[in-house]
Image 1 (cartoon, rainbow, N blue to C red):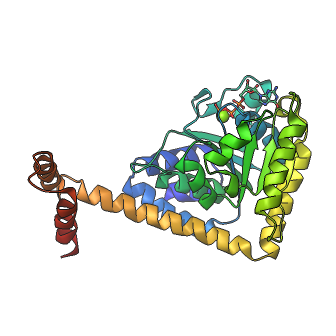
Image 2 (image 1 turned 90 degrees about the vertical axis):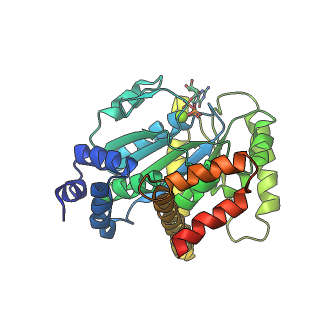
Length: 313
Ligand SMILES: Nc1nc2c(ncn2[C@@H]2O[C@H](COP(=O)(O)OP(=O)(O)OP(=O)(O)O)[C@@H](O)[C@H]2O)c(=O)[nH]1
Ligand SMILES: [Mg+2]
């Protein structure tokens, strides 16, 4: 086993950070280490947290992480395309608590600006989940802003997906429009210290009643005030209950299979793209075809056939 892999397995934070950088840069050393750590993954509970911008996801994650730390659990946090200020791997929120987490050895925070070439998540996100898992984190939390494909993709990684909403008519409707409503395992109405909470909860519950009428588990709707540390213990309990439900109903394996499927497809896609667009293979040919497409001498479908035909030969 190579050195970096064994250090990651020992939970060394510097090696974790280094391996993440290696996989982000698609380095062969990174791929080798991933192969070594893989047998030691699968133990962490992966939680996806998504919701509209500014709904309090990062604040809530900080609070939830503090609760897990009280329980003696180690936590990894991945923020994808964060819009809140992050710097140097530390989460610089407007709360002292976030600063505390940044210096806690039992917590590893990483932000990634990594939309895939074709939208959605890049394989680096899957890799980072595996790395944090292998390094001994009991819980890995992935934060995405709820606006597109990445949020739908996050459920493929997460065992438990939490959709965050805030009080006020329109927000929940907005979430439905974004198509993220059906991905929730738990709904949280955060900022419960603001007016309009009851109405928003009622609204979501009526939607849950319709969509869960023929399922054996009704999606719970919780309220929190992350700012006031309220509702956090209850949320942690509900997350635990969801994991127990997954394990009891055999859905855990099915959910994990989705993640491994997405991960494998992503690795293949990335390697194939790198191969096609490499100087030593087809980059020249691709450029030539793009010129021809621009001049309407060839259509993109024929061009794609030509490239793929060369690979499959
Ligand atoms: N009143 C109130 N404000 C909150 C609560 N939770 C978070 N906030 C505030 O909402 C703002 C946004 O919080 P963040 O935690 O950065 O929200 P976010 O969803 O991570 O934001 P993005 O990552 O930018 O999408 C901050 O000013 C928080 O202090 C809450 O429970 N009540
Ligand atoms: Mg945030």
